Image (cartoon, rainbow, N blue to C red; front, side):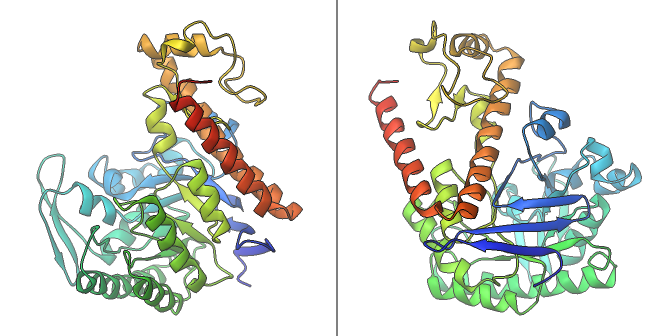
Length: 383
C-alpha cells in the first residue's frame, strides 16, 4: 500500500471504497466531492465558507489561471494557496479539456496542442512540459497529466489514437515531474484514462497507465454528451482495471444519484460545476430531488429548503430565498451555492459512513429511489 493512500474498507456488496489520501496541505477522506474554483475562486463564496461547509479539497483550473493572471505571477505571490487564501489541498487539471472544448482553433501534435486563446485569440501551446511547469508554479497538491479527450461520438480509430497519445503524454509528464522535483516534493500526479464508449480501449488505457505507477488515476472523457447509462457504463468499464491501492477520480460530474452510482463502482473523488452553477439560477438540491426556487408556489413558503436537513441555509425560508433569487440579489448566489455545495459534500460524507457501517449497498439504492421519486413528483407539480 503506498504511503499517501490508505484503503480503509471496501463494501461487501458493491465496489465502494473508504479511503484516506495524504497531501502536502492535509488529509482527504474519501469518497469526497471537490468544489470547483476555476479561476482561483469558488464563485460567489469565500474560502471561509468553503471551510465551514466541510470541503476538504478544491479544484483550480490550469488553462484559465495560466491565461490570467498567469502561473508565473501566482508563483511570485506565493503559489495558488496563498494567492486565493485557501490553506487546504488543491487539485489542478492540466488544461487539456478546456483546450479541446473552448479553443476555436487547435492543432493536436505529437508533442502537445497548439491553440488560440478564447480570450484574445493569442497563439498558445500546451505540451507535457508546459502543463507540469504551470502546475508546479501553482503549487498544486495534485496535478493532472495532459491527455487528449476524444469527442463524442468518435470512431474507434480516433479513440485509439487518443488513448495511445494520452499514454505517451502521461509518461512524459511523470518524467518531467520527477526531473524537476515535483513528485519528490510530495506533490501527486494523476493520470487520466480515456477510451470513449469502447470498453476494450478503456481497459487498455487503464492498464497501460497503471504501469506508470503514478500516485492516482482518473476516468476522463465521460459526461461529454453521451446518455447517462452510457456514461455510467464507461466508468464501470474503467475502474476495475485501475490500481486498487491508488485513489480513483471521475472528472467533471455529476448529479447526486450519479455520484452514488459511481461510488458503488469504486470511484473515490468527484468534482463538478453543477451545484454552484445552477445555484446562481435558483436551483437547489434536496433529498427529494432538485427544487427551482423561482417557482411561484414558493413565494409564501415558510419552510427551509430541505425539511429535516440542518445546514448553513436552514435559518432561511424558501420564500426569502426565492425573493432574493427573483430580485437578482447577490446574496442569493452566495446562500444557494453554499447550500448546494454543502449538500454534495455531506452526501459523500454519508457515503463514507455507510461504507464503514457495511450497509452502503442498500442505503445508496434507497437514497436514489427517494431522490428520483421526489424529482418526479416536483415535475408533476407537487412538493
